[in-house]
Length: 245
Image (tube, rainbow, N blue to C red; front, side, top):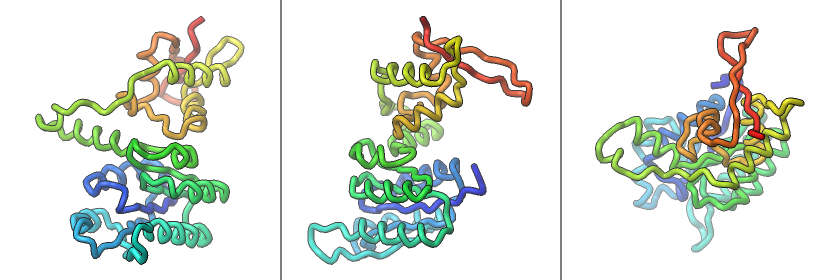
């Protein structure tokens, strides 16, 4: 975790499942310190009652937002207004917007224009405009799957993994990214490849394909070569990758 990066976590209770909050907060902690944690919804609705214990366990502040007009999502407006207030307060370096709703596309774009990091989290049904408006977008299904695997129960392990298949589109994306960064011999530093992949495709995540890290993912594809080199400045070896000729 980068302790100097302060993140505001804003959650749309209407669009995310309550049983994944723990995994969400653990994921956010990888990128910074979640100093502001708020969740928005109409807490008078019976279906939101299951959130109570989850919010207490994770120290998340519930924000009450009544639905003033039938068919309109007042929660979105409340989140957007709060996000802008937090932005102008200058108290955070980034935001995590948790929703599967494309209505937050403009908000994510505006926050990034202000120079802040924006992480999005939502289900795989999330529309593309919201995904590409974020610096990074993480699917909740992947977080849930990792939680199930770590729990190791028979019931959970019997579920089919919700992972995407390595396809020609992914291979082309990786190959073009390596070419963009390659030296005269065709080698590119793996860390730089990962960073550029993220910029090109915010929802790129090795876990989407069943791999915890980028190196094992690329190693599983026979289109690429991987080389480990000694690191003069540390004990860990440097990993380079290039396209096979």
